[in-house]
Each structure stands twice: as C-alpha cells, then as structure tokens.
Image (cartoon, rainbow, N blue to C red; front, side):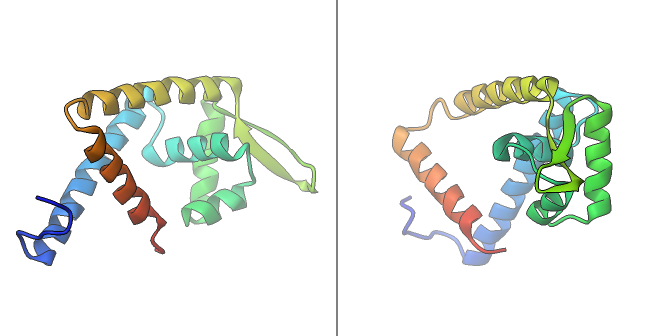
Length: 147
C-alpha cells in the first residue's frame, strides 16, 4: 500500500497509531530502567536533553518538557543522587544554576545511545532504505506539529 491510498477508515488508523505509539513508549520506559535501574523515562529524557543543549536551568527543563517545576526538581534530585548530573553557577544569574550531565552521565548516555542504535538497526534490518527514509520523514513531520 502506498502512503496515499487508504484501506481503512481514518479513525481506525488513528486508533492504530495510538496503540503503536503506546507500545513504543512502553519499550522506551523499559529501556530507561535497563540503562540504569534508577532511571525513569522522564529522568532519562531530561538527562538526554541536558546533553543535547549543553546544560540549562531547571526552569528551562520545566518549560521544555511542559512539566511542573516540582516534578523537574524531583527528577533532577534523583539524577544528582545517581551522580549523573552536576550543577554550576549560571553566568547570567549567580542565584541560578546550570544543570549538565556529569562525566558518568555523559558516558551512560553514550552507551545507551549505542544500545538504542543497535536495537533500531536490528528491528529495521529487513526494511528498505526507502521505507526507513519514509518512516523518518513521517516521524519528523509528526513531531514538528504544534501540540
């Protein structure tokens, strides 16, 4: 079937997307705890975002993830207790702190990234290059949509 043809009603497709994304999310949560037993999917996502952006303030994390500041504070406290993040003074506001991955946190993310890459390579091994490109394009399009 090509992406432009439809063999089932739109509502069935939406239901299927919801089920499949839920299954994807469950695998991601399981992977987070395999990476480190103290990590939740949220704490892993926060750690990964800190790596990606080079560090930021807790309020920036709350804004980025649309989370309450207290939720972010608990997640950051857990990451700090696990030795996966460090804090440094905010050069723009000495009252604030910049949170960034520790060396241990960065190594955990590197290893986890390689583990995820291998899982994707294995799962998509039988897919054509065109199918993988289409899948990537559609995910990018979906994630670019406004909330």
